[in-house]
Every structure is written in C-alpha cells, then in structure tokens.
Length: 269
Image (tube, rainbow, N blue to C red; front, side, top):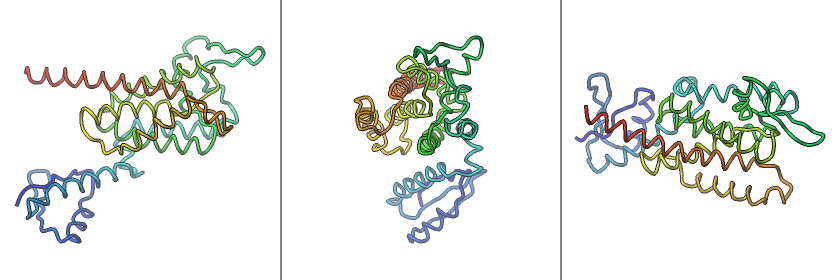
C-alpha cells in the first residue's frame, strides 16, 4: 500500500475521506509522528488522489474564512483598507483628495506633488481608491485570489515588498501618463499576474488557469488600443496596468535570483 498524500493540518480531512469512500477507493489513514498520512491500496490511483487533494487544498485557500484571513494577513489588511476607503469616499464621491498621489489644478489643468513626508504614503494610497461597486468587487476578488496564493508561497516579507513596489510603479506610471485622478488595485493585480506567470513557469504550478493570463493580457491590449474609450464604456488606467505588469515580471526575476542564491548558500553549508 503506497503513500499517496500527507495531509495539510490547515484543512479538514473529512471531505477527502468522504470522497474516497464515495469513489470506493481502498485506503488507510496513518498517524506518523505529528502528521497524518493517506495510503491507498492501488498504486495506480496515487497520481489521481494527489491531484484531487491539491485541488481540494487550493479551493479551500480561496474560501473567505477567518482561518484563511489569518494565513494571509497582508492580503487581508490591504482588502480591509480598500473597503474602509470605499466607505470613507463613498466610492470616489467624497474626500478623494485624501488619497490622490498629487494635487489637482483645474485652471489651467495641471498637477503638482504634495509637500513633505506625505508624498511617501501618497505613492501607495491611490490603490485603495475605487469609483464604482463593480470596480471594487472585481479588483478585490482578483487581489484576494492572486494575492493569497502569492503571499503563501513567497512569504510575508517578500509579499509586502511586492505590493509596495507594484503600488509605487503602477501609481507613478499612471500619474505621469494622465495626472493624479485615478485609483484602484488593478495595477497591483497586473503585477501579481506577471509574478504568478513566471512563478508557475519556473518554480511550481500554483493552479492558476492559463485562461486567466490570456484574459488579462487581452483586456490590457483592448485598453491600450483605445477600444473601451472609443466605445464610451469606461476609462481604464492603462499605464498603471502596464507598469504593474512590468513591475511584477521584474520582481519575479529578482525572486528567482534570490532563490538561487539561497539554495547555493544552503548547499555550501
């Protein structure tokens, strides 16, 4: 009877056992030290059981629960701040100047940076601004999905650096392109897309469907080409998206380089 999986203590094992019983898979759960192991009778079933368990774990990671929020505190904090800002500004109707990256000048149309230390946090704050409920929901869901995955696999310290870098790069790109009247998490989300793409390609499969990458790039191309504007649908922060995507790809390359150095140092000692 070969070993199929080692259970992750973060997730309940009962649904997995129930599914194996339903599929008439002969199995045994063994406690080995502090971990639970699943052994199956037929070696040919091991790959299928492994794939099922990986999918089960991924689906549970995306569930909105207190346990999951505790496991990805940075992702949870960003989303809480985003919801708070949506309430304070009433989705961009009031007090947006508290979160803009620069001051607006309407006559003549221009902008200029704020004075003093507030420029530091204003490099970040536009990511919390959203201007419609659809804008807020879409960005929050994609941030939760991709951010939760990346925070788990890259570690909290790197993930904080990733979010900050993507926020600054995306916000600065959009500021230079169109001025300070913009907001949203989508620049950071596009950075996550770039980071996750390289991570899946070079490190390990995160279970993110390829269709999500294709859809994101297609949406970016449509935005940059001016299709949405020409149809009078909505304004898109294309520069933030492009800047975020490039920033995510660069951060992914730096992360891979850091992994190589880490492995090399470990092997030397």
